[in-house]
Picture (cartoon, rainbow, N blue to C red):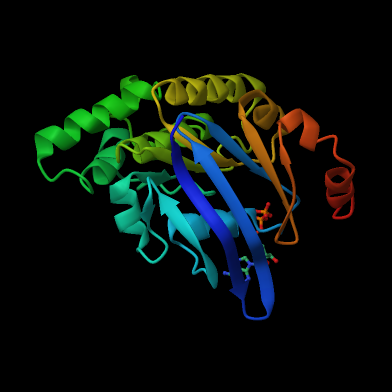
Length: 238
Ligand SMILES: Nc1ncnc2c1ncn2[C@@H]1O[C@H](COP(=O)(O)OP(=O)(O)OP(=O)(O)O)[C@@H](O)[C@H]1O
């Protein structure tokens, strides 16, 4: 499978704090990479550095062989790097469809095309029947799917999902896991920051563990969660 993302030796600092220290990762088309680690490990910062929301001190990000390291987030998005945010941010006075349309318009300025893409994104996440409801009326599970639809409306090659499973009840978690599997079956690749191990074990083809900004382990989910260094890193923070 072709490699769609290559982040090489990424370092991010906030003042004197090294939030991400010389971390590399790569991702093949249609695969899922899980990024785990205790609170404050640097997961979101690495994620932000790759998507353009945090400045890198050193290192390079290649997306489909293009060096995107210095490009602003909206250009990376246009190239096909879609993302969700840790907190849902819908426009509450807009309908579900209108929220997705806002995203679709970033890539398509023709109303008809944007609407077609937005409706297709809603269909993919199972929210078509809610299209004309106000987004403020959605429950948490549906809000998460709305976030996903917004990212899909940008027709991404890669989806960066920041804790999309957090707070979901078991049935909603199961649905989200199935949904992400369906997306990868269409060729979309996923990088997910996630604390819910069940989701990581079921979904991730490869897992990277961060602690204090450093990569401390990587490999199959089942192997890394039993790794002594990883267990110690988690225990050490609670
Ligand atoms: N904008 C910022 N300015 C200063 N320090 C920051 C900033 N963002 C993150 N940090 C610090 O960088 C370190 C890594 O934080 P980060 O949010 O990336 O960790 P995380 O692994 O995503 O944690 P969590 O699982 O709690 O979301 C932490 O020490 C955090 O306080």
